[in-house]
Length: 93
Image (cartoon, rainbow, N blue to C red; front, side, top):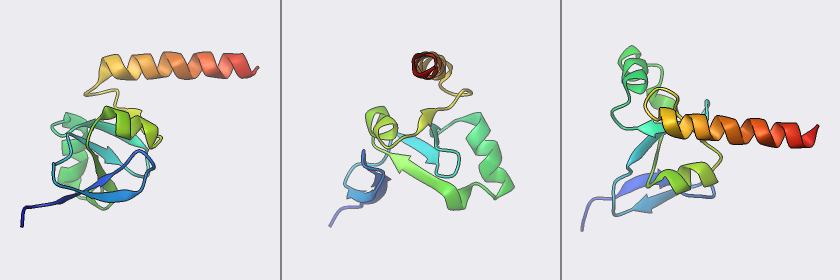
């Protein structure tokens, strides 16, 4: 039997995967980013981040689950997300 990983799917629910996640996230902050993100690694080193840590197979699953890109390790994706969020907010006014 092969190794399995617990990832959040597009519906935000945990699921078993035969492939490891490519992105990590923080459940409380609803942020996702690279596994080598300096900001996440600092938070993990402090010890408080780990209980809220989640993993995603890919960016599409993270976004579908309602998570936003990390501004530190995914600045281009974050800028795009921020611009789309601002435009959506303006359209509601």
